[in-house]
Image 1 (cartoon, helix red, strand yellow):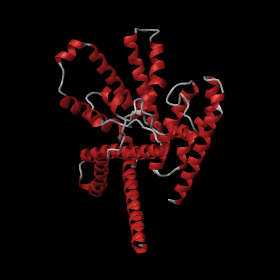
Image 2 (tube, rainbow, N blue to C red; image 1 turned 180 degrees about the vertical axis):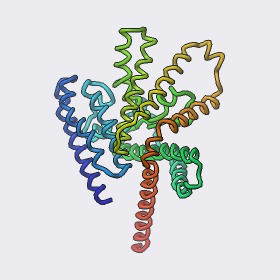
Image 3 (cartoon, rainbow, N blue to C red; image 1 turned 135 degrees about the vertical axis):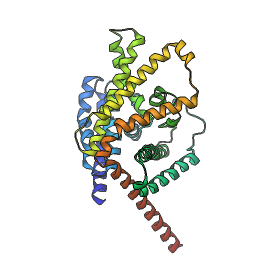
Image 4 (tube, rainbow, N blue to C red; image 1 turned 45 degrees about the vertical axis):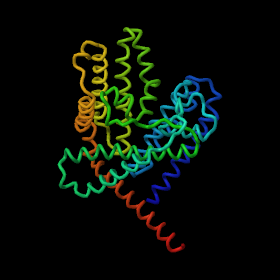
Length: 346
């Protein structure tokens, strides 16, 4: 634990220094290839930093924040695009909006508060899940797989909510939500584009989808050019997830994760093609409840088929849940210690 904490400090001090450099020097360089070359050493460094950890959680979180989000945002920044344009007013904002899956709301509400009850329920459910892992030998593989998916969703929600609150307190500005109830998605387009991990599609649209669509429009009509753009965005997402898996497993990619995203890209494109046929939509319109069941069921089944097998074969799922249990026990121990000290000193 002590060694991991030292590595955590080294990694994030390196990240702060690197992003400070990106804030002060590259903006003075002409946008395009010259600015991209000026930030390329930082991009390379962020590819390496997750390898400093042996902890799955620290490696994955660092990879998501730096290798995935920060690198893509800095690439867009090199070409005067993306969420870092216009450049944030100070270094702390630039750092937060570079590394974390957050952005300022376009139409801020007069009152922005954390839905404490919903968050408390998610934390309670997460605690119950961790307790259920003690009975994993009595659970069927399908039920255990369902628990893994719920665990992944809740842990991402808790971590990103914590980041959002800390940044909100630090910067004092309204922030976009990170997700929008993905379990209520009525289509794959709704799930991937408007509900799940909203910062990722916000980055992939200008970085991958829009350029691919412009190139495709030279060969086909604008209506059909969106399909290569969609497929390209899903392929890039799949390749990035292969990299994230590598940081956790430290084994060569098998291509299963990329195939998962390619499948979803093809199905999303087919879904949009069907929606263009208004007569078909009117004839086969499903109720929202049925649409949600089909969408979430499709994600669950294909995820169990292609997304999780490599993690299960390598034992990562068990290590991931074990680390989560250890962390919760560590936090509980610290809280009880602080409470005891307060009682004794009062």
